[in-house]
Length: 350
Image 1: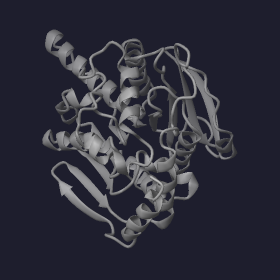
Image 2 (image 1 turned 90 degrees about the horizontal axis):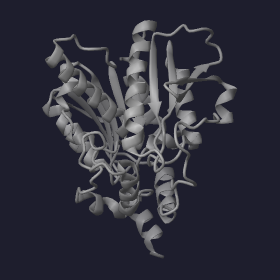
Image 3 (image 1 turned 120 degrees about the horizontal axis):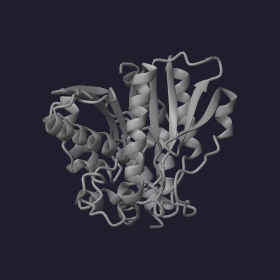
Image 4 (image 1 turned 120 degrees about the vertical axis):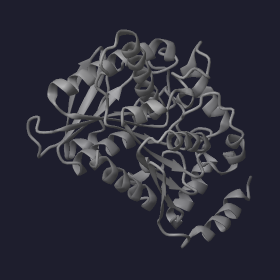
């Protein structure tokens, strides 16, 4: 272990100057592949790998229900943050200070990651504020969804389904387009909610011959957690390279969220849901994956399923990047800044 950082750095330096951007068309999905890695990122990976058994771990158990959040003070320099409650869930609307009133036609609801147990970090607030500043006529809304273990999926999911339905109706009433986005565990929640709602709609329409209800135009998934069985053998194979996640940690967070639900349940493992419903309702599904992320292989399985079902969308696959690497953009990492730029460009189209 003592020689790992130096040996790893020597190996990783070979990455510099590798392949530029390469893009390919995979049926309904457009996948952009990048392979270059900066020296700064290599160093960050070497350092964080030494502390990965401590980074990102929940500091304490959160209480039952949605918790009230305190926006990161740095974003208040350029944005305003308004708090509201929807179905007993706190929601935080972020807008640039130069935007007055409700002059917008799209809202992005963002579910932050944190192993289903931690509230949004400063990096989450800064990412949301950056999206708000760079996307005209768009409001970014952070959702403070109930957190495990006091709000495991059997408790939280029904609450979130009720919230989801209300947000859809509000988008109809207000006349704006809706996008749901999230990273890691938040991406899991977003995808699970959308797919379960579509399944319910499909069942109700079949039984009662009722028209389909409203739905979002797109989903954006950053390093999504898609299979809570954690049974993919590539998790262990990739573990030596992941700078921040370990197999034991991702298994523990999955267990905390599942509660007494089976980890194969489609509501916690959306990889087992009917992915084709997204294509049927023409909901685009975008995503970002990193090559050193132990959850990346399951995310790629999801991407393959999306392609098989002819779901539209754009994906960014970046070799040798860590879990949720775009969240590191405030620290000046080149790949993170490029990733956020890609994300903005894609979301502007929806």
